[in-house]
Length: 456
Image (cartoon, one colour):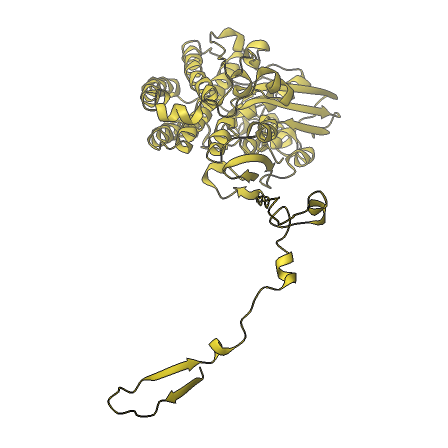
C-alpha cells in the first residue's frame, strides 16, 4: 500500500507528530447510480413488468411505500433426509414455516418390473414380488400366487393355505412394527424403535428357518408352498408371539398416552372418508377415516373366512388414528396367528399336479419322470390357459392388485401391478397443505410409503 508521509517542522517546546494519509481514502467514493437503484424499485423484491403494471410507487407524503413481499422458498425434503423413507424426493414450497404446496417426485429404485415379468415364466416372476414391498415380502407373494392359480383354475391344499395365512400375518406384524416405531422415531422418541427392531430381527430369523432367506423369501408358489414348515416352527412362533404382546404393551405405555406424541400427531394430515375414497386410499389409510373395508373380510381368500378377527377402523382420519389402527391390526394379526397354529391341518403342502409344482428333491433323484418334470419346469415353466384376471389381496399397506393376461404360453402376456403406495403418495400433496415443515416427517411416516412398488 502506498503511504504519503509528511513531517512537520520542528517547533521548540512542542512534540513532533507523525501522521499517515492513505491513498484509497483520497480516491473517488462510489454511490449507487440510477440504473442500480431501479432494480429494487417496485412492488416486490424482484420486480417484473407484470408486477409493476398493476401498481406504481409514488414516494410522497400522501402515499406511503408498500411493504415489500418476499418470494416463497422451495426446498428438497429428501431423498437424503432420514424421514424421507426410501428414495422420496418431496419439493416443498414454503411460506415461512408453512407448507403451501408439496410436489412428490418418484425416484428410480426398481424400474420396468412389469416389463421384465413379460419375458420370464411364472416361477421366475415370483422373486420380483419380493422386491416391490421389501418390508412385507410374503404378503406380496401371496397375491401373485392367487392370481396365477385363478388363471390355472387350481386350488392349493388346506395346509398350504394355512401356511400362507401364517406368513402373511407375520409379514403384516413386521411391517406395522417398523411403521409404528418409525412414526414414533420421527416424532422424537427413539426407544421404541430399538425395541421393535429387535423383535423384527426375531421374525426374520423365523423366515430364515422357513425358507433360508431373511428378506427376499420366494417361499410361496402357485399351487402351494415350496417346502413344508420345519419341525418345531409353530412352537417357536407361538412363544415369539406371546412375547410380542408384552412389547406392544410397553410401547403403548411410552408412546400412545404420551402427551407430546399426541400433540405431534393429532390433527395432522386429516382426510375425510369421502376424500379418501376419491383419492383411492386403501388399507389403514382408508380404514382410519371410518370406512369398513378389508379385503380379508369383504372378499376372503386363502381361507381367511375360517378365522375370527375384527376389522379395525378409526374415526378422525389423522396421523394419530392411523397409528392406532396399525397398532390394533398387529394385535388382530397375533390373534389370527394363534388360530392358525391351533388349527394347522395335516396333509400335502402343494398341489399334486406334477406339471405345475416341482417334485420333491428325494423323488427327483430316484424317478426319471420327476427329473424330466423338474427340468422342464425350471427351464420352460408351465403353460397357463388364455385368460385375464384381476386379483386383489390385503397387504399391510393396503390393496395390492394384479391384472394379469395370459396368452396360453408359459410367459404372461401382460402383467400390471396396482400398488397401494403409489396412490398414497399422490395423496401426500393433498394432505400436506397448510401444515408446518416439522409435520411433514410425521405425515410421511403415517402414510407408510415404500418405494419399491412406486417406480415399477
